[in-house]
Length: 89
Image 1 (tube, rainbow, N blue to C red):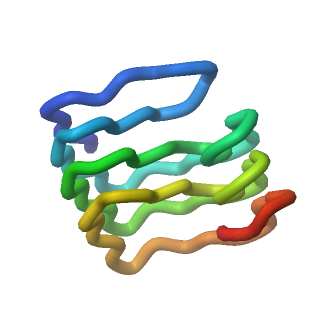
Image 2 (cartoon, rainbow, N blue to C red; image 1 turned 180 degrees about the vertical axis):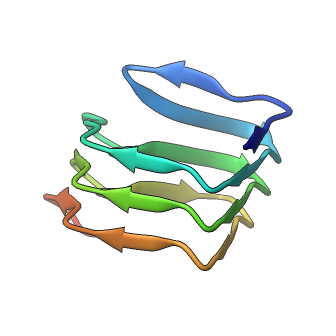
């Protein structure tokens, strides 16, 4: 189940900008985000991630998820086998 106020897809990545969606019980797998966030990038806003899995995603920064200027809440999420060049999970 995904409840979203504003979420955009950009280069096969969930891109959240200035909004606060609730993303629950989702699998983010085998995504590539180029520079930021293999599965997603959060640029401001206050999204809530609950019971999500980020597996085998790749990017330059934040292999599974890239977050900046945000007050994101991440609860009971699993990050594994994500790959990044610059750091993050």
